[in-house]
Amino acid sequence: MHTEADPQVPVLVVGGSLVGLSTSLFLGRLGVRHILVERRPGTSAHPRGRGNNVRTMEVFRTAGIEPAVRRAAAVLAGNHGILRTPALSDPAAGRWLFQRMDPDGRLARVSPSSWCLCSQNDLEPVLLESARALGGDLRFSTELLSLAPGADGVTATVKDLRTGEHGTIRADYLVAADGPRSPVREQLGIGHSGPGELFHNVSVAFRSRALAGLVGDRRFLMCYLTGPGADGTLLPVDNRERWVFHLPWQPGRGETLEDFTDSRCADHIRRAVGDPGLDVAVTGRVPWHAAERVALSYRAGRVLLAGDAAHEMSPTGAFGANTGIQDAHNLAWKIAAVHHGWAGAALLDTYDTERRPVAQATAARASDRAAEHHHPGYVPEPAPTPPADRPGPGRPGPGGGDPQAGILAAALGYRYPDGAVLGTDPAAPVLPHTLELTGEPGTRAPHLWLRRPGQEEPVSTLDLYERTPVLLSHPDTPWHDAAARVSRELSVPLASYRVGTAAHADLAPTDTSDWAGPHGITSHGAVLVRPDGFTAWRHPGPAADPEATLRRVLTALLRLA
Image (cartoon, rainbow, N blue to C red; front, side):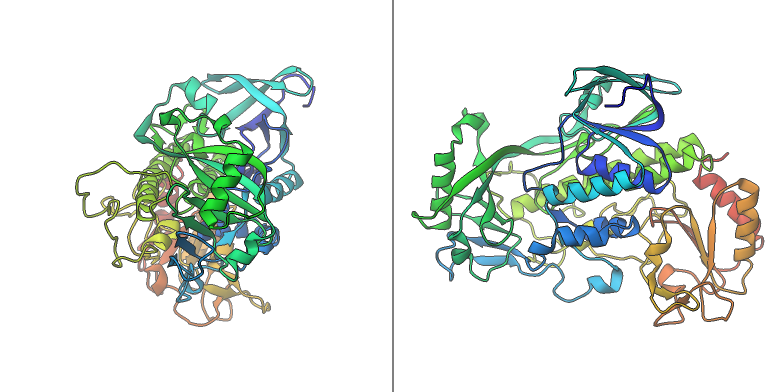
């Protein structure tokens, strides 16, 4: 830990797992100095938290690390689908819940990215290296002891666990990404909503050379094993000899973690896969608890919650870490805008307004999915018939009995009916059941391939969004010049692109001259996209006074009044 007295930074991040490291990465990309403290000595060593959905990979693309993440995930690049079977020893038994994440190839039409199976122990080092390369001050073996929030900042007392030395850090804002038992949230007295604990598992890492022969060519993401008295979930780590098995754990019946000895775990795994002679060498055990909880507030003055500190959800569907990483992405641009002086402090209130409803809806969807999959250890409470907008456990969602129905909509199609957006439908569902990315304010802006003049390599529209708000309009409309004048007047770094086939266009569509229609505007209109890639506002046609219109819109969106 540094020894200077009372360092002062714009942001202190507490927690150095996936969400904290992502927060550091995004802040670094946006030029916001920060310190991150993490009590662990280093990144995670246990394979877990592997499913990175398409939206997470989009934000990693924008942050410049998608290629590095895919390199780290290369060993599992050929794994797809979820298998459910009573035993792996019988290749004819069982069925696939689904075999491909994107069987019809639709994803390539709506995103430049795709899902990626990268375990937490492989992903965290990529985030750490990238964040440090951007100047992030990341301090492991450093524990937050206490915090003193004030009207103009937060004072934190920390301890270097290697030397025992205490220190003080002063920050304008504190981002608490310190996990489901968040000491920061507890100190602030922020409670939860939701049903609470759902089920408990013990994650067992082990080596087995013979298991690959039983698996054969079934390259699954995970396999639910349902044999009587030996159920659990098998996950490949390298498809050869490293594996993880999740055993149901019943602490309510008096089971302790110490009860899960190496021999008990190995015997359970042998019975589950159907081979009593299987070689099993246990290399690690980590307990985990599935719950459905969402904090009652994501903000207390200068302190903001992110990731598991703000929400917990069933791992089924891989929503938890993805939701947390996307929390960080939403929050980072807002902190940067306030810190750099082109947004009012009230913009940070929209973090709670936008992200908390998404977590509530996503956590409910994850619990429903756990019930649909009959996740080992999960016995959902009988529930009354749910409302039409939320299929309940055991009830098929839109698309019939397809267990993949709605998964892409949940990963990519969530929306912000309220917040730093204008012209939204406040009654629209936060999580739609079908994916509709049509440029509607509050939704992720559409992906289209574009080319810059003189460049052959296309760029996605999503590649334009990271550091500033962006206005898209056709050439030969007054929007572009109006944007330049308003940007200077308000001191807002508004980027403006003229998109079309005219010679003086800044960008040209690669396969169609109609980019405006997919954004819900005409050739006389304009669309404003936020730094996080969400549509903030759109004007379908011409405006009587584009400059006044943009001035009013930016003032309202960025809370400049």
